[in-house]
Length: 568
Ligand code: ARG
Image (cartoon, rainbow, N blue to C red):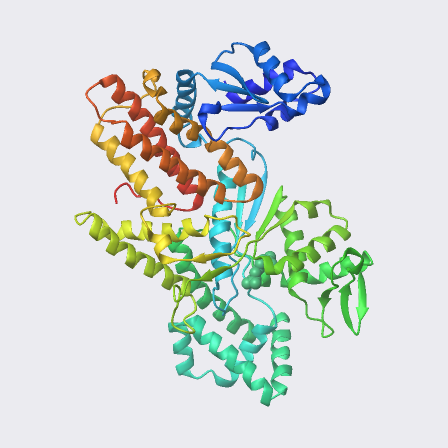
């Protein structure tokens, strides 16, 4: 039985103007279980009954009387409060969790549907900046959540591996690419390539012809010139090697690395389609789509020299994805500064007559500011995320060594906890909110942090190990009706809603907040209710609860992209 559903059904049977969905939306979960486990405010009915809500609530609660699965139904002020039968509730939730194991939080909403999650998408030969970090971590979690919900998912890294800047790099390399520079690039690609790029831009000021040369080389690249292509693929390859180290640390794998360059041969079709659909206007030799009547600035599609732009490549990419994957949703995890770009792009696709424009979602996020020096890093040392992670691991190693000096696999655990702490912090807030990164907050074993949750998980592991008995769902559920156990079970019941909320709103933070509160409830239970006790009945029931919490924490951390070490 679904308790909330049951409450909703009671209300629809009392009033045939209310649908089940409306009833479900009316139901509140009081902050404190003294006010019931579910509460229905009766303001909504006052029109129909022409009575004060408190009177209606009183009448209704008397009418409802005794309900199976509920201890009592009571009226307080304008509310009808439902108190679940705790034993029944414990049995229902824990048996379900026991049967569903790590699928307990999932539904089948995704069955038969394909969802694309595009995330990270750094630019070749350029730093992996904080926006890419956020995209990587938020996107990885969204990808996992959608996979968990049964979708067929495609993880895409839309690499920024094309555009005029590659003309500059090629031209710069042809001018200054000595064997020493080649060696330096092989060794530390991104800072070295960045140096070339920066120098080229500086020298344009005194050598205006460099601008023209860069344009020439990008055109050559677009035209398939062998030399240009060879250099470009080398830049791409050495940069990717750097990025891959970061993805490896997070355990991220992509299904596709089709970046901007992948669409270079698909651009002509896009332009002629726009032309055919009479969407292109000439503007001093360039081609634009006018968007002012939609409250947007016009979009430049092709420059006067014939080269294409970022937005052109994004139109080609969306069309290719629709054709190749027939997506149900096409999700782009990219920072808020690109909102205008995605608004223009979606509008153009819509104007082209594609209804699936609405299925393309820009999942944006705010910025992170850095606590003084928190992420300070060697200047120009650009895959600095790696420095952050290394520092997190180092700091965690110290903390773990203090807390648990004889832990076996210290390095592995420090890695899982250090990296996990950074991920957890990143996914702790509403993604659009800007936040301040703080080492102390991130790595603390107390409070609402990754290490705290992982530590709670390790606690459940050690309890289960110490108990060393076979656990099944044939237990005396009346053992689990005390306040502490009941609160844990109520939290467990909320797992599905947290995952579904994250799914609906593309917001991993529902799961982050959820799993902290589950860990807190469990720790309260652990302190109040000894688990490994003489009484076999009590022990078995409490261990079943412990095991359920263990599975749910592990599943939730997995959805955030975090590991769950068994000891720490
Ligand atoms: N490479 C871009 C940047 O770093 C992000 C790409 C976002 N994805 C897209 N399909 N436009 O700014």
